[in-house]
Length: 390
Image (tube, rainbow, N blue to C red; front, side, top):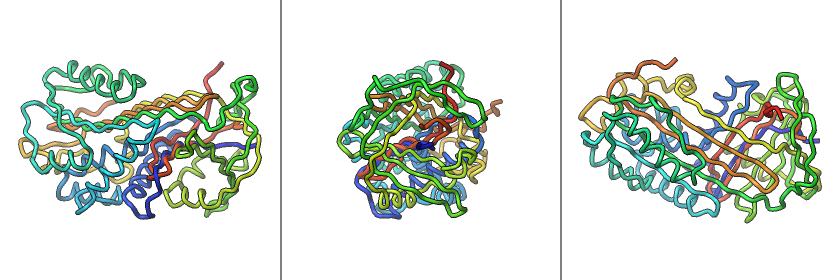
């Protein structure tokens, strides 16, 4: 029986280790690990690619110590020669994959002028062109942004920003939207789905609809550097360019953090190299996850407190006003059923002209990743700790 940590990973053709996508994947997975560590008994789903993409857009506008802080934390700089082109090729490859829709957006206060170099590099790297918004009417601005997100997630995320989430001090919102629709290469037979008990991280048990499939899967057994044994099983989507890894410790009492803290592009590459085709019967919960999170605290804990301070330097975006990041928001919806997986994510970096007011079978926990084999981009990662009561 496989007990799973779930990570959703999407990848296009694998670029060499050390590539821009590897570094973005590593940063996104670090954010996921940090977030999951503070949510030990809860379900979590994140888009590592979305977080890395939005912060990379902010990085293009950073200078001085703010640029150094972002570069150090993220492990790469899009301001280096040739990097915007790599970013454009990456986003193009992902967007051209069947079942994947992706877009980057920039909403800017209509009276604020952006530096020409920032506008030019945004267009080159992300194919994003600024859209003027009247932030003196925050509710109207929320409606505009929500409509953009809904349009670029096939309606899966219709109300990304809540009423009151913006103010008349908002000057810029950097956006990434992602929609994924994947059909299993070999679907689960709904007739075999049965109610079984899921053993939750907090020790309780909850009934869940457990899907079953007997097939040949890529499977392997591994051990972490600190001695935690775990297994990995890959479930492919139709077309074989996308797959879901199911990852779980052998011992039920081992927390998922013992695995999630080791996630990296290199480790995923090791999995791919060492998995072998074997016949297995997979039992996997049918589940739906929704996560809405402000990643401010998570990013501060990762050494990015500078971007949220009044002293932040985003003068490469504009010299009209001093900007800082108020919040980094992400909303993710993910549904896994007998036919396949549908996932949607929206990520936003909200920038203000001053510091904003502080706002107050798989029958046990698993992590998940969806990966696109051409680029190695991790579009979603998450942890499933507790099903909803039936």
